[in-house]
Image (tube, rainbow, N blue to C red; front, side, top):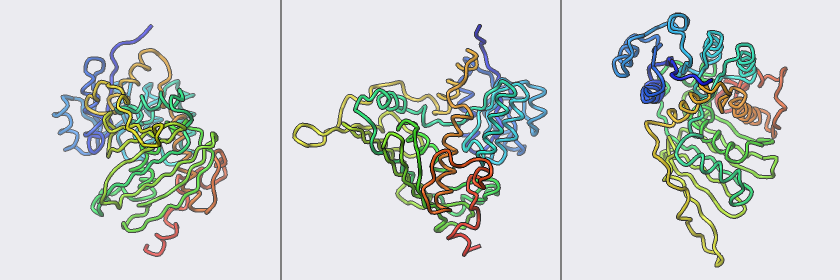
Length: 372
């Protein structure tokens, strides 16, 4: 028996909460009700309540959960709050929809997964690039081997964030943000590329550093991935670039797929090239196929998928265990930089400092230590 309407609360009325989560939830009024907004900042609460037509405004998550009993709670909060809030939400009988990074360590992710088992609820990791325009078409084509095996991948996130970006107190600090350009800005591009490549990464070699910005976390990183399939990929992540773009590329046996975007993939930003019989590169005009444009944003598309899973009583696509896979890759990337050796998938476990912290090298990382 399926259930119908879903009661949704949003925690975090500024930043990504106001720009993505609240618009997404409000646009799903045909199948969901926005029952509460939670934020410590009264002005943000009031503004969001007026803008999105929600009268139930709270400064306390626990009180909201007790009074409103939501079915789904979107957590658009600083990363350091994700684990305790997600577990509290699940223990209150609701699903959590949690912004990236899911949390700050593999140990923390495993506690969230344990809470899923304990409560029978789910913690869904935000991975909106997987739900953006053209992404599913690319995934399906690559999984079906339409153009042969994936051989080479590229995920380059070259953005600009000026020093003022870190005026918000929790940003730029290991204790509250956990990581920098790789985890905060490049997360979705990395997550999308590894998903497209099949997810079977086996090892990573990386360099992580803080080259210019007055912050604890990194402002640049570069990495090389190996996959069990034999494929390789490069990752470049920075907030220092004046030429801002997000670029993904997957080269297969018979084609090269490109995505050139900035903050959110659109169908018309994907392209496909093949080499013809004369050795000339040709753009393939009939891919990707037409599809409905994104309504509001890709958070909406993912939330709608979550709502379908909730109504049907089945597991959502990006559970905490699925989000943990990306977190493990990022952790291995940081460890590789600290140890200057390739880190294999699965080698970071209990007893390893990097099991307890995404970037266990912390402020002692070479390059920052000389400036703090």
